[in-house]
Image 1 (cartoon, helix red, strand yellow):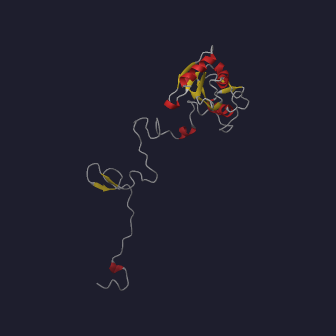
Image 2 (tube, rainbow, N blue to C red):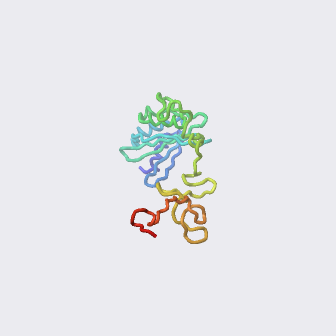
Image 3 (spheres, rainbow, N blue to C red):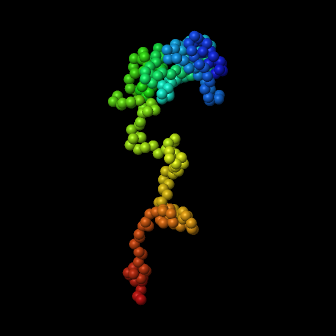
Length: 233
């Protein structure tokens, strides 16, 4: 079945429940994506698993997306080992009361995923009897994957780029990152001055050496080394 056919089949199974089908991006890896109301969440997964034409018997993964004021999208990917097609099922819960029915009774493999999603987003899965911390210590407060959560490292040291490492929020340019072991500008090397020939040093403009040259003891003249080799004046 094509992604379009999978989506139409899921919507037909859920009638009269309001469901919307679309197709994700990814070209050859595109998936049918079906949005369902939270009240029909567990029943939808069960119907997609048990339907002979869909037969999505393999639970792949479950997670969430923080949509800020829109709430949280809970997304699950199922796969049919018989027909070799997949489907993305999605439901949205409000931010004030992020709760949906657990699907552990439908797919036992969802237990770990629901625990992680509960821990990272603060979403409750009604009926799950083991929503205990999975990745964070018990004393940790907050949900790190919520968009309003501020990481402690960002408070101690602001992120140097606005969009990705190396990009500045103010200037919009990309910071040059040196390979490991390469001296920073201003340490040594040959660079041209702003206007003039190549000079020694890579320090302040004008060709001034960035580091003060190491002073070496003067080598004594041959006549001052002692012994008979120097002779007399």
